[in-house]
Image (cartoon, rainbow, N blue to C red; front, side, top):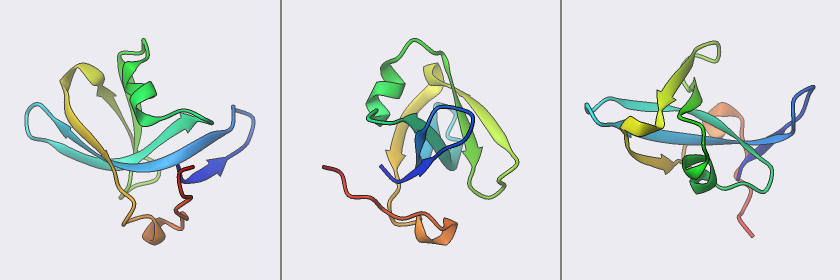
Length: 90
């Protein structure tokens, strides 16, 4: 996981991901995961949609339907350009 974010909401880890949709659209952005959660936990939970903060625009959020995701990949190589540190997995 990468960087912990705190505030009035629950504490989360932010990860940079690339999401490939069924129509070939590719999104690159940030997903917030609850602490001690994995990306696969998010994909297997009961929610039908995932909020994805677009990497190129911090104010834009795309709501992605899990039903139409072909693949999702955690990106570690692009973290520095967004000021995030890579925290090694245990």
